[in-house]
Image (cartoon, rainbow, N blue to C red; front, side):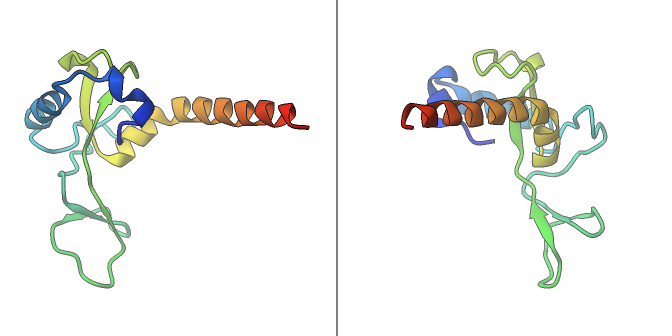
Length: 121
């Protein structure tokens, strides 16, 4: 997941080095999440949507998803960059793990928007 601009200052100056170390530890493959423990999606490959197979060459008629590994903070705290708190995950694993937090953030954002709207009535 990209780092949101408002959170950029929460990451250490050597974040790129930390990220590279975690990807190396993972063998540049997804480390698997609680929902998909055996994932192992290779970074930069394509997942064929109809079969779930990982390929490097894509045929024109195939519907595919590009696999881009991200680094997940298990405790959702960017300041905590201990290796035990970090996982290399594909989009599916990361988004599934963060789904509850994303729902809470979306709710808060919508609620704040409604509250601001009340100011201008």
